[in-house]
Image (cartoon, rainbow, N blue to C red; front, side, top):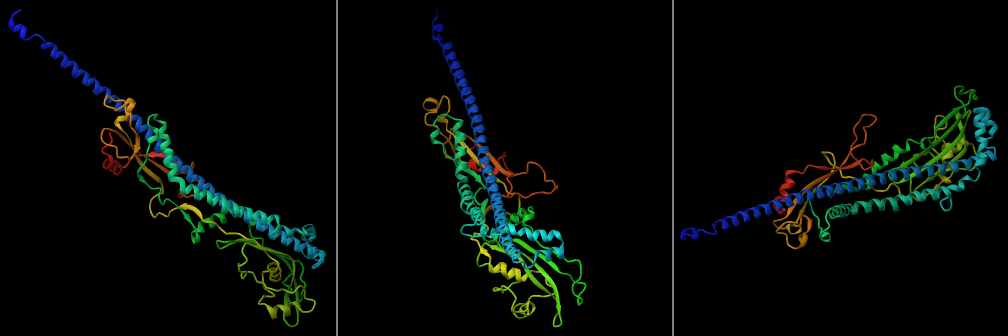
Length: 469
């Protein structure tokens, strides 16, 4: 072999080794790129699942609050029924005593107003003693009222407060759990923080005068029950009885109402009186009232009774004085053109029962917003350290000390993803009247879904941790 040939021996091998090294580096880069792409997709899917789960927790919490508010309304309607039944029980008990004493006689009522009214008056005998159910200490109706009040203030309100106070923590814990379920390495080191969140201040407690919407809901619900409607009925006798006023008749007046006074007190009043048309030479025609039944129950001893014409100490009878003289000397009642049962009111209120209720509770509702439809929205960023990935430069087996985190400020070399989710109000089907419905916490129509990430949120994520790979 010549000397020149020997000086060039081995150069092809060096070139081959260089080419092999370049090819190996390319394969490594291809492998690492594939692994990074796989991890990126995995991380994005895990974060989307976590964000959706967080929004779903919000939706379920808001729907629970809505159901709790509706339960508050239902219990208030139950209290209205209990107090109405109580005043009816007192009413029936008093009517049974009046029937037993024939004051007025059932035959007179039946003769003037028809057989049906006479039978109804006689049937009151079966209600004798029913008023005991309204007694606060041991009455069954009073116990039912107190139990409704207890559930409202001691169960439902506490449940609402617990859900409201823990919502942020439960949402975050749920998101962490979902993220951890997508990874089996270093799950104990999961951490979390959000880029944006509208939850603070979204749900508030309404108390005091702000309870007016709750009262409106109670009144609307109560309107579906005829038993709680006003119980006002008038019946007139057929034939005239006084020559001085032949156009007038004897009257049978039934009065009754169940009301939520202000925001604090339920009350129910029931009366029935026979107003006998009479006349004399001093005042002409007038109505002589004969109370036939009465009952009154209220939830606050301090509640004023000024809306009902009455006197505090009505006489038991008028054997020693004329009814019309007593009325003129002690009251401002109208003897001829009145429409109430003032003497029966007086008996009802003087013998009334006072129950102990705490009134309408505060309730959980949405904060007032002047513009836009209220929606719960948040954005989050998840980061996975390079050391936790199956790349050639990862430290330790399967990533060693890597972690998955929201907003932990991990250094360069990791992967990150940003996702956003919203909890919004939408009816499952349109309203029957075709109208729109504003979001509220009285209807359980809250749903969850993923939403696009805002540019400002991506910019915020960039500033915190560097660009999302």
